[in-house]
Every structure is written in C-alpha cells, then in structure tokens.
Amino acid sequence: AQSVTQLDSQVPVFEEAPVELRCNYSSSVSVYLFWYVQYPNQGLQLLLKYLSGSTLVESINGFEAEFNKSQTSFHLRKPSVHISDTAEYFCAVSDGVSGGYNKLIFGAGTRLAVHP
Amino acid sequence: NAGVTQTPKFRVLKTGQSMTLLCAQDMNHEYMYWYRQDPGMGLRLIHYSVGEGTTAKGEVPDGYNVSRLKKQNFLLGLESAAPSQTSVYFCASSYASGGAASTDTQYFGPGTRLTVL
Image (cartoon, rainbow over all chains, first blue to last red; front, side):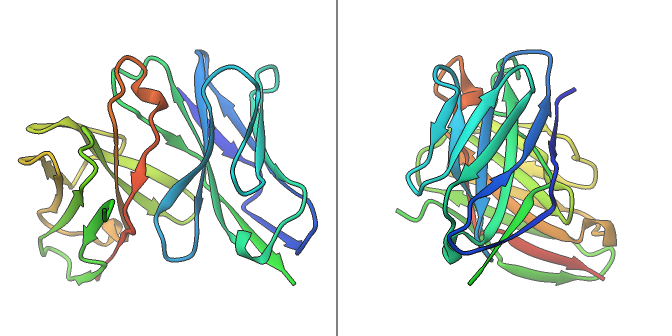
C-alpha cells in the first residue's frame, strides 16, 4: 500500500530565508506526486505536480520540487520565503493503476510559519 | 465561476443526530470526492463518485453515506453522528481526462467544520 511521510510537522523560518519541506513516499509502481497548499481557513489548492519528464517541477510563486526515484522523495523548496507563504503544505501521491479514479494518498502535512 | 462550494460552513450536532453536507461544483467535473481532515493525519478519502448516479467507498467510509443524483452535486450524510466524526470535511472535484485519471488536479471547497458533542 502507498504511504506518504512528511518528516516535519512544523517548520518555522524567518522571512527571506530558504526552506525545504521534506516528503518521502512508498510505492512499488509508477507514481504521480503532488504538493497542495492550504492557507488559513481555506481549502487545499494545487501548488505543483510531477507526472513525467523533467524531475524538477516549479510553481508560479517560486516553489520547486524534485522527484528523486532512488530516494523515493519529492521535497519542496523555496530559496526565499515571504510572510504570505505561511500555510500548511501537503504532499500527496497517486499511482497509475488506481482503477480509473484519482485516489490521492496525503501526508500528514507540514505547517510552515514565516516570521518577520 | 464559484468553483467548489460547501454548505454549511460550520455545524454542531449532538450524538445520534443526522445531517447532510452539500457540495456543489460548476466546472462540469466528472469526479467528486469527500475527505475528512484530522490533526496530524492529513486528508482521508471517505467516498467518491466517478459520475452522476455512481458512488464508491474510500478509505474511511463507515458511518457515512453519499449520493450523486446530479452531476454538479455530491451529498455526504451522517445518519447517526458520533463524537469520532468531529472533523473538517472537504469536498473536491476533478476532470476525468481519460486513462490517466490519477494525474488530474483536484479542486477543493472551503470545508465544513463539524463538531459532534
């Protein structure tokens, strides 16, 4: 069975510092990987996803994640964070044989707190 | 274009009461989902639907029922609420882009915070 581990439940960081949110998954088949972000009192929204091709994927607001098959990881990074990046970040995985529906397995989430 | 909306936003129930959560989407998506979010556990899939008139169980279906009578609506029912069902409930929807349905982005509603006393 698939599982997703987000290694840090909370990450405090100062504004303009770099940040890495770690995500590891377990799966024996080909996978699709996602990062979703949840801003306070809102639903989740897609930040970026890896489907195939280049292992480095980027979002429009400066985040990037790298798919590492040998380490079964999909860590999320940003070189310089803003106060507005304060949110909870969820890593999720789905496989290519999920029976025709987009079943996502979510990690427990990492709360990113950016301080001035 | 409202996206995915959920009704109500908040609700407090007593043990044994029933209620229905409504999810509506205006994006003509085929797939719809109900999740619950609990602290430290991420989101867990309760039930899902791959089209009008069809529903299926997810990871944690016990104590919940669903219906998808119209393509744009997906209802989640609690017949006899229990304190263990205190949670935040999210509805989501996605396109069905063919063979690689697992690649589709899910669009989430704002959530319903339910407390069962």
